Amino acid sequence: MAIHQTEIQETIRMVQMESLDIRTVTMGISLRDCQDSDFEKVKDNVYNKIVDYALNLKPVAEQVEKEYGIPIVNKRISITPIAEILGKATVEQAIELAKVLDKAAEKTGVDFIGGYSALVHKGMTKGDETLLDAIPRALAETKRVCSSVSIGSTRAGINMDAVRKLGHVISETAALTKDENSIGCAKFVAFCNPVEDNPFMAGAFHGSGEGEVVLSVGVSGPGVVLHALKRYPDADLGEVADVIKKTAFKITRAGELLGRVVAERLDVPFGIMDLSLAPTNAMNDSVAEILEEIGLESVGTHGTIAALALMNDAVKKGGAMASSYVGGLSGAFIPVSEDNGMIRGIQDGSLTLDKLEAMTCVCSVGLDMIALSGNATPETLSAIIADEAAIGMINKKTTAVRVIPVIGKAEGEMVEFGGLLGRAPIIGVKPFSSEKMIKRGGRIPAPLQSLIN
Image 1 (cartoon, rainbow, N blue to C red):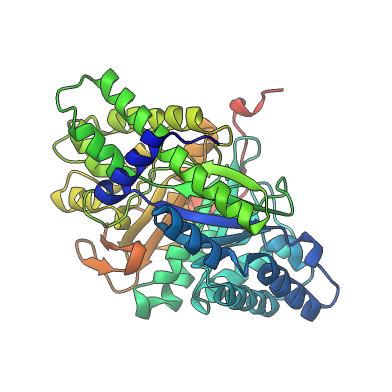
Image 2: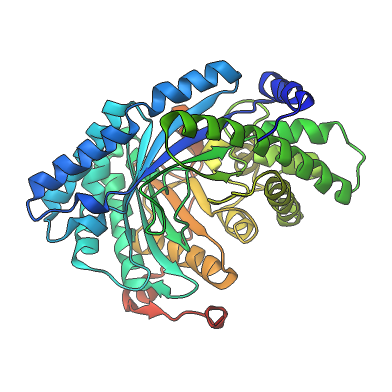
């Protein structure tokens, strides 16, 4: 991968002035050969394999970070969906395995380990059911373990029995971690059409189509895009798209360079570049502020979806030209608690839960890091998941729900999560019930779009 001198100079400027960082390097590890009839051996196999592969991930990434002068914010691990290796394990054993994962993550020094997961978009095995029952305690009793569940896809439809169950899973997780502002829910995602190579948490897992081990990169850069647009205040929208596209190209090139160096030094294959714009609470590192720079007085007002669609598409086009291995989610994230512009939009009244849901039709993922009033019922949470899954299913795209019903908090209050998770204003939910629909269960059939053969 040849890098020109001018690219190096531009990258230095992006790091020093525009908040460019590599959001994550994530090592994916297959655990399918860790199965055993003796569950104690399963735990040993899982721990040893993760540590053997990932022990040097953090020190190597930190060394590359120093050499190239580009921050690598997170070092993470994704693993085979744990439900696939549980077999006949009990709920207690599944919780024990979560603690083993946490221990392995601590040993390797990574920030998070993702893949305490199940794929149940068409049905549930005994291992899947066990995992779902274990999730609340697993997330409450570990620090680094992240969980996700696939409940729908364009090809399979939506498993409403699983959706109903997840409303209770989220509620129980919130209750078990209420002393920490229900933070356990920040480590859980419900997916429709999940991808197998996503390096971002909390939804990362190492899918069945992946190899033994792989190193993937999630790059960021909202601040870089924002600064680029500020240089063209009078550009028309076609020119705005071109500026974003060219900027995404540069960001992706920098990210892939570092990812390939880290992978080479760890002697593992390079996987994909996820070129999603992922905001932080740092000043001017906001997706919402990009939309406002395009011409919105406040994010959420009329025109927001058009501006977001323009930005998301331009990011994909620029990134796809920069790398032959674009994957993951690749677009724009709109996590409320991690984006100062989104927070202001909610406080100003321009951004609502309904508008956020509408925005997910054209952005990268879905409802992300949204703090809800603590009195949201399990059925309401399930209905929110169902709505978002329907958007993904019909539009043949990944959608997700990561919401946090904060026990003891009401609409309008502010809650602090700390670190990269940031802070968020509490959003209220509708006072009308969806209970009858959710309790019907069954499956929402796959749409006509699934008939593509």
